[in-house]
Image (cartoon, rainbow, N blue to C red; front, side, top):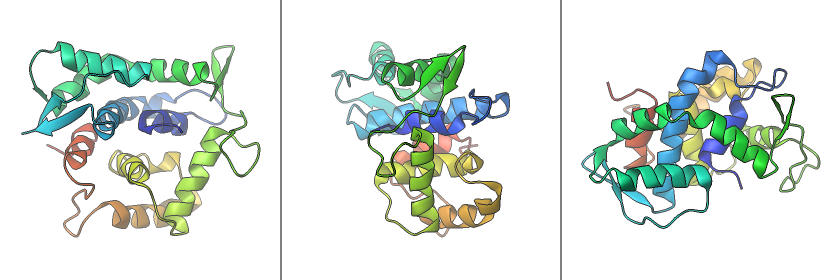
Length: 211
């Protein structure tokens, strides 16, 4: 199963150009950095103490990108704030590395410097659909058909919503309805994120909501 940063990268790929468009790269890099921290939290490798990232388990995750980030946090020698790590991970240029990783594990294939999405997804119940189509179909089921989301899916929707990237998952004709329903799904009455700390904090910093 793909994780948060992989899902965001796949959604960011343009269907025709088969690259991540320059118009979304800046935002996507920040959101990807947040997704990497979120994954480390979900896998019980880090926690937050007073807005600072603390390593609770330095055991490798066996995922090259997550481990690279985890080792950087371990090597820092002292707890640093979420914003420091978001900025550091952006600087690491993980966008290209995630693409390489997805090629290595067989989710994408590279041809003439392009990343092709039309690879049968063995986990799909719908037959030969790309990982991106499978992911978008699942998000549509959650948002438009009322299917119950898993925690990771709510976190993914929160990154897309607060990063203003819902357009990557929903076509123009569905965007207005999707925006309203996602807002209800991942925010509380005061319009704050409601994923629970520290996930709220990670999403807020990655999406620039902490100003």
